[in-house]
Image (cartoon, rainbow, N blue to C red; front, side, top):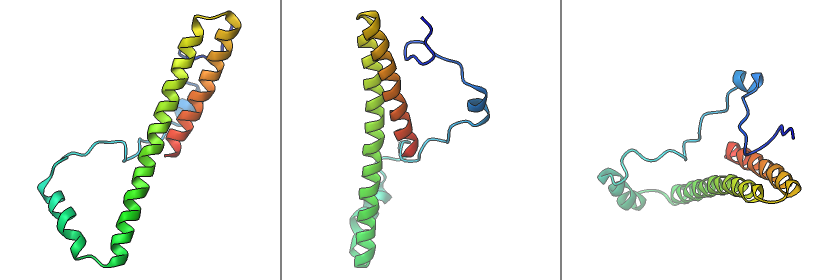
Length: 119
């Protein structure tokens, strides 16, 4: 049986994929260099007392948006993991079930990759 798209079998990248590599990873995915910095704690605790009200609200909005982006990244990763698990689960079943779960897994994985690229 010929499978063009399968989660169980890797495929070589096409010429267009080699010419146009994917974009670099987002900055929210990388960890911080210094996680418990004294300067950061000082700015966080005392900086709010000296900022105008609109700047505080803008800062809160930026933090909320960053948390939303992190949540979307987590959803995309989980969707890709679910797609792989679905493909593995269907592998042991009947040939038709195996084929359908593999193709559905590919679709879910592609959606997860698109969501990850969007973030």
